Image (cartoon, rainbow, N blue to C red; front, side, top):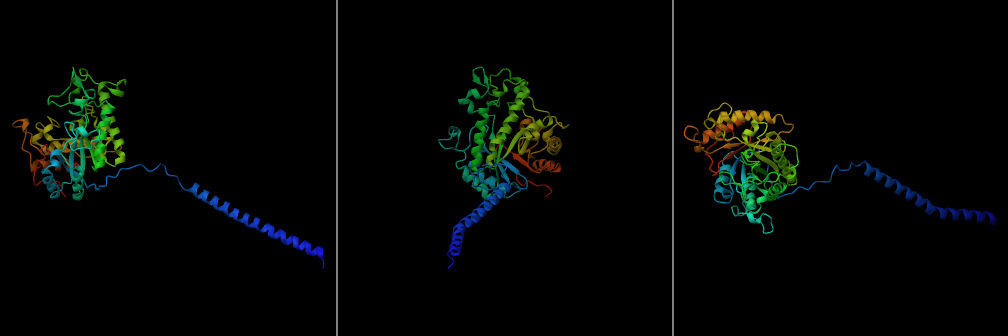
Length: 402
């Protein structure tokens, strides 16, 4: 036997057996490296999100935005009382489809009770005992709910915080109707109203409508006499008119930003004549600047509220002509904007007998339809009807030509 050859053969076999695990491991590692590289490539090729998903509040209620909003104003008392069913019946038997309901009313009260721990518990009233139940009824009927928040006209807050209002001598200033206003220059006032709006959004309202987004009427005649702070607008070089315009516009932009996570539209009521001027100097309303910061603009164009405008001597007697002439002006003004809001004017469904004999007419079906038709003829199909007592004219055709 050739022992030398045998030993060499055996050595080769042992070496092969010893090296096999290393080969297998190397192949496995190679596979692992290849897999890791392919995964890494997939990760690198997968686009990263531009930003993290933003929180959006869900009230649990679902409403579809109608073909066009055709709504009525509803006080807290009506919304929480027996009249609510009557108004629901009106909407169900007509082409109306929305309600603008007082949440913070003209005197500064919240129209429903709040939890004891709420900062607004003391101003909550029992007009609407169960607002959630009311909204669930509206959801069932698909009546679009809009929360009206009266902002800077407020006779409640100044009672405890006169420093947030306008002071005349040693007392809070009131207008000829005994109403107080809070100060649009102050961010604390902004937050106070926005926080109430957030409460409404959480309940399930689909839109927040801010009213009295302005300084008191005729403020330009008393702005130097009253005592009030100007907040961050104090040190600017602008005149008082521009300071007021910026404060009002900045509030609207701020409110819209704060309400964005709640998925609600933001609308603002504005004097109709504001669209006919570069800006209303005393009250601080600039139609174009406000319109650029809202989803909906609602001009109050009641014929009774105009004097001799558009060449019409007695506007209350000519509802069709007044509304049509206004709509032309507004369309031109909104047409100048890069992103125009929805136009949804307030129309008159009340009789302005206070104008005196010969200056007014009794408003009913014919007069309401005339205003609506004037809007339609100028391409505006959304509107709201105002009657302070919530008594609306019967048998109105709310969609002329359809």
